[in-house]
Image (cartoon, rainbow, N blue to C red):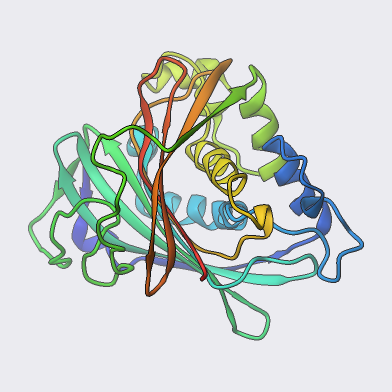
Length: 303
């Protein structure tokens, strides 16, 4: 199985239009087990506050479209979420009409398979930027057809810093193996993937259909990577003075392992530094078995 770089890189789908309403914003927060009133207060001037990871909801349909346009079914079932790099220009609001476009930036060979980075750019009805995400997928056991090298991007660690990608945020303190500054244990219910699927409106059967998951080579259904990241972000914001209202500019991570259900996710804070682009908070998450589920976590907050 191969992915052709020459015919895949540069493929664009969209824009796809979404009408954002309070019900969807509240459902996403509820699917994560959030209880902060800001996520559910329809009396707020802008309606309920959207969770920083809410962009994954309106990005999913166009993600499915661009994959269907460029990848065979045989390749698609081998895909796992490998990296995530989200830039938040402003949070989505109830009554927003959002337009999302997906563009495949690069296809690169990695030891486990083909690494594909897709950029999702979302603007509002006035053309103002809302979010930009570089979403990295790893297609296990799939080769890159490299007769024509159209990318020229180097093989660099997350966050990716190749041509056309978001600039890498640079090294962080607290990720050198030292003891975490804080740790939070988050329970993962047996039904969480099913609840998250419906609340986020993200449908991938490996997360809810055991037969499909096992046919894809997984031991069982696993929690969505975006849910794992969202739970970690919630834990980070829980330590911030402004809580959910913290002005989040960027969230990035590398996924490192499966989260099974039921289990517990341990989120660890690994230090914070001040920089020109804001307060940079490092974090990671461990699975219920104590293995790395997510590493190189980064949240940048304004100020």
